Length: 436
Image (cartoon, helix red, strand yellow):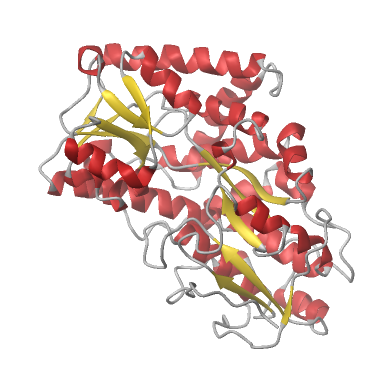
């Protein structure tokens, strides 16, 4: 029997799936089947599933033939978004749609919005004990348990920032870095979890302040809500006063004036209503704030699935990078539009402040590498990869069309991110980890 939950909702419609990446598939099945199989709860890692598998990119009719006699299954998936209408929803809904389409509906994905099964502090336990089969998680919230992951997240400050290319570039660069870091992968394996996307940088970070904060003088003494250890260090080095608090408390803290700014990612800033009380956005260009980072993980029962099902899930998760990119760029557009609607400003930091941010970014990266969890050439690899991917993205037709403050004017909401997702998957180390 399928699991049941008191709080869940399916996707409302199909959100621009990437059907061109797979051969035509059967229509998406949205209704729950009352007595289909469900994933078991025994341990194991990816690969080794029973039955026949298929090569990546195989024709749909070949996949249909391989899975024809397999029992249907229902997977419980907890994405990041609070609801199906959230600007962040495509990061999960595209993944769910691709799985169902490629499997012809034999793998049904029950989407549970709003962390209804487990909060970020217990989501790994829920995956390990079988309450969840697939989930978006935030290992960055547990730096002591995921030390290499935290160190890798610190290095994201080296990347340039922009609301379009700057939101695709980190995914492309760090997809390889996550899959090739044994310490990152081992931390999941030790907990009985299977990485589907082991390291996923979150959307770009902007400051939302009650008054413009754009210079070194502006920063002195400014109280800013932060969300990671690296961000705490950076704000201190800039002369500010970092404040750690639950995100849900931030609106009231800004409203009361107990904090002056929030340092947060695009979609969360827009959807949290923070721009109503802190409408002045500040951003960097050549470098960025250290991003938080997430992961898409499978639970203990993944290894019990037939090999073909494992491959469908793995491929679909990787190809759903287009949904992740859309949630980031849509979030940036929503944030910038909201700031302007509230009479706020959208401005780049002054030159001296950006130089200081760059200095701190390099210091933090050097210290993270010295910790021993990252290769010594990590900074050089990041720079080379960012340069190569910037050129490749341009070849694919992705380029910034103007300044950040005008993003709401030049962003094309109909952008097709499928070619981006396909290019990243097919050229990355993820292919080496595809179940076989």
